[in-house]
Image (cartoon, rainbow, N blue to C red):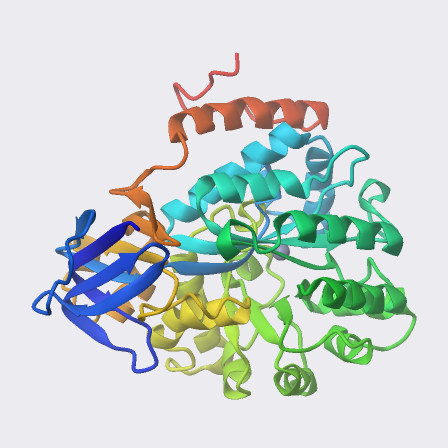
Length: 463
Ligand SMILES: [Zn+2]
């Protein structure tokens, strides 16, 4: 069994005592963390690999609890539109993606997440079903090949959506059963499947109940967008033909609970926050995307005060143009402070926990998210010897308010070194970027999307 040590870093464990260890050593055997302490402790048996983290902060890998890698080719296309107009613009591009294109987009997203220090992500995928193969296979293959820990949250649509994407309940059940058998728990638990409607009005009440049943039958969590904006709650009232808000609706159709993950929650009433808290539903916040769309942002402190388990997310690169969870931490603090008019509404220490151990619990992966003996080894190192992080008086505040994804140097996922000194070891990044340029242009052309001329010299190898 491979034995790896990371030594001499300043370690933020995110354990229950929030221990910070100077001159630290963490030892990994196989997939697991087997020792956490200082370099003056008994080193134990020799290691196959020792990573010197002098001058670096060692912390649990970040948990990106909601993204859409399948939309990665839509980056910079339309971020100055309203959410639903933007979706209309991107959909033809997605419909034009075949299995090869989807794999390339997903792999791009995985590599981008790894380079930002996200060792775990939830990929909320929605693609037109195909007769011959399940599009989700491309996502799972990319997660598997990149080495990242990932859940594919398969979205379903049954009405009021592009008909190419819609399916019946029977088709949903069949496809979910097939994917669960093929992938759920794969790679020793590194790969997971979850399901849920993409938007609240694309299924009716029966559709919600049936989706819940299909999730239970297959032992899967529910993952869905919830109350993204006041406009969304108005749309729900219109589609369901009565004055009901989304969280109230979810309560009515049995779609709240500890195995339910609600992304966004920008427009929820105090009563709805109570419903989320009482049911143990997890909430996932994506502040940069909310700000990007100008659709309002949630009063995060109210959720924390209610005792709700909260994670952080970037949402898709087509929405906020990046996958940097450091941005999400910073914006989570900024929006929480603004909503509450209180600079302590969300502290950096809590934001870091939301991005690691609490986020891991929110998406049903309590075996990850902190550096503790017995947990799965998902860790990153961050280079602290940089002007924008000096002087390093308070490592938690430095990480949340001053650091960025590009400061991450190494990533270990499930005990495997996936990035070393910013070089991703599982994927040929140069070849991938050339492939992305070629494939994304092909998809845009067949979707009839006019792209501006490439402005980066030397990147246009598509000619
Ligand atoms: Zn989303």
